[in-house]
Amino acid sequence: MKIQHPALVELLQRAYSAEKAAAFAYIGHAKSLKDPAAKVAVKQIEDDEWGHRRNVLAIMQQYGIPVSRFYEVKFHVIGRFISASCYVIGWFMPYFFAGKLESGNVCEYFVMMKYFHALGIRQHDEILYEMGIKEKEHEVYFLEQIKDSKWLPYFEKIFSWGNQTTANDVDLENKLPVETSSQYCKTFKAHEVEAANRQAKGKS
Image (cartoon, rainbow, N blue to C red; front, side, top):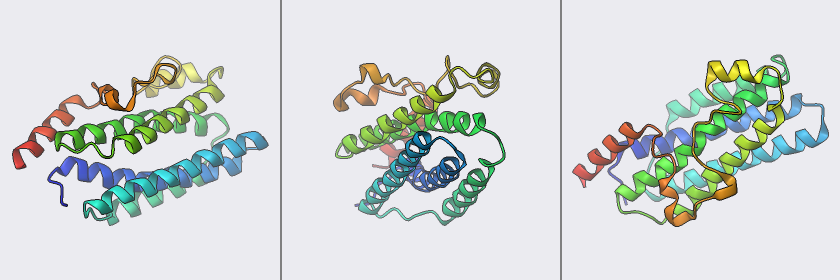
């Protein structure tokens, strides 16, 4: 079955490759840490990202969506660069930028869900929900490590992420069930999502 939704296809391709970049980054991050417990925690997050990559690939294969060579090369280079930089940029920044990245990744999976719903497809809701929630758990973990850092208020002002700012509206203490979780991320690139869904519906 082919899907006629260019934005969804592109998002799946980008997410598949970006998960590799994230996993590579966490390899370097974990190795750069001295605390054994922190190494284990970041290694687990790396494993989660590889799992997400496998899940996204399975969805892509179901609809005959090819892996993007461009994204694979691009994110391979980005991931390796970030991995190496973790050894030289200090303790704070790897945690901060990992948390900011994960904050945005949360909504990507819920946006995928919205795109599939526009096509009348709901069979992927559970796995997309699980991946979105897992990314939120990653964000919370990284923020917890730096929440009391003197640097965080300054970085939050510049990069719009931290104790007071997030790129998503998921609350782990009050999670919506899978069935209504498409309500998450209503304002995340809302105009782009609406336009993409209208275009897809017009083609169907």
